[in-house]
Image (cartoon, rainbow, N blue to C red; front, top):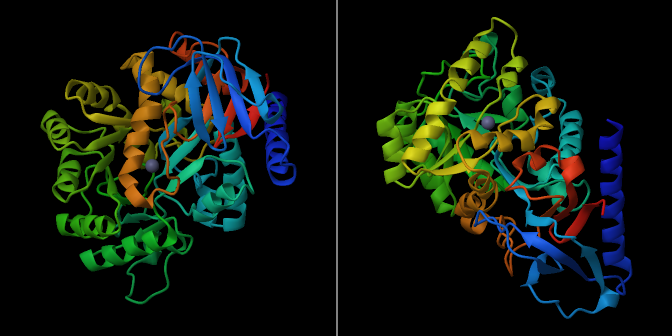
Length: 448
Ligand SMILES: [Zn+2]
């Protein structure tokens, strides 16, 4: 606990140092040189020979095996000592507003409290080496803005805004006494906070999608079938009709971006694909024909290896808890199908309602070596995830290349004390093993 607190303190001090130098003293270093490092570039599963990497502003400017001619007075040099420089990690299924809070606090809905908690969690997320997250549901626009403005340290956020669902669908947390809903009646608490919006016709879906785009959504998230954490939706249920899904796709594509759909079952996955959806979240209950369809159509699968402890958010004997284990049972088969059919697969964690689990974000990535080599695992969480981010097109809030170490890419970098391909367990303990964390060219942590 003390170690954690002090690493955050170091990080915050470094941040203050960097921003004040950038603002007030133009004589301070304007470039940062990583000397004598080996590169994991986010694309290949081997490390480079010893290299030098120069960061200028927020861009990786030069990579060279020969010494780089630099102006020493204006360059901060980090002697890498043969350590590994790699791209910042990316989590493609994150809920920045929901990861640390409890279900009770979320439903009570004090947004000030939830935002402060999410801000603290965002700083911890960044200090775990996750420099980018795709947020697939939650009122996250204010947090994103505060991070982008440097008010609170945190990862880059690709926000979906509110999850869009149907009456009784995954994300509808209303109580039985809230129905029937009369047309024109006040919104439920979940809708007021922007966590989830309920839509029951193609026209309503269009309105809700366009509202999220107005707020700055970089992609749109719908729930196409039942979910674990929701009180009213059975896992086998299909929710939106194809026409409703197509309305969302049309509105998103008119805005230059795409729809991703929460779906576990073959029916809900196939219906989403028929409607033009570009990405499936989860997919744990899919069958072989569905896997073949996903592969043939070039659809992304954003899936997760959920830890059993995730079910602890739900009381013993509850329906939610039994649904959780039904989903977990599909994990092995889903990864096997994804590999067999060479499905474009993205890594994410989907941590909800648990600070303890959030602290294991890197460990959940390392867990993928059950199905992939360490190199494949690390490529998935960097270069591959970044390819899925590119589907946001011109709605991308961070123009530039992410997830790779190459000249011209955005400088989101981790310096790892060791070789994470030879020993992927290094990413399970970021406080110890990530000795430098850089986001957008700024050093957030440096224990060298
Ligand atoms: Zn989720």
